[in-house]
Amino acid sequence: MARLAGKLVIATHNPGKLREISALLAPHGVECVSAGALGLPEPAETGTSFVENALIKAEAAARSALLPALADDSGLCVDALAGRPGVYTADWAERQWFEGPAGRDWYLAMGKVEGLLAGLGPQAPRSCHFACALAIAWPDGERAVYEGRAPGTLTWPPRGSLGFGYDPVFVPEGGTRTFAEIDPAEKHRISHRAAAFTKLVADQFG
Image (cartoon, rainbow, N blue to C red):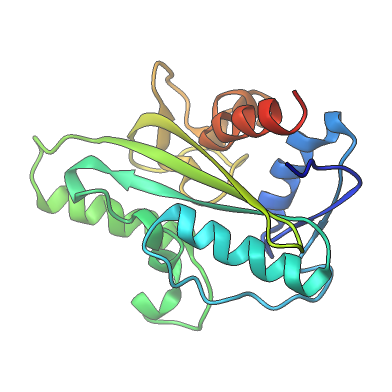
């Protein structure tokens, strides 16, 4: 089995995601560079699961850069909404859902989730989880996948400014602060991405 070493392409154009993944890999001597910094195009995420979308992104980056590539596909799954937004987590932040110019507005996305929950009535459960699939692809076609999740509940209104995406409305299980109120180093230890990375590290560097 191939092992990670040297330079690794992180198949993302999201600076927050790049920082988080780079911090998790830094102790293992891996040099991370983003697909955005290399000018790689973003492939269409046509999968119906986090694993499928992560593989699409990792394999496209590995082929284009001729380097090993790591992709993350993650999202918020709300129990009362039958797991939505799920793989469409980022799509719910696209402004075409709303009036205004193109782009992502996470506050509006969080409001959409809250609005749907409110429509179910005050007794609707607010349980949810963040899910993450990490896919590594090598230029020769080899690949590996690792999955993790972080259970929690939704809160409203949003709180905190340290996270990104839906972090301001997600309170991890057993906690009282949102992911956006938690120091990033602490979040790295308990997040869905951290759970997936624990498996990756054990497999790749163990």
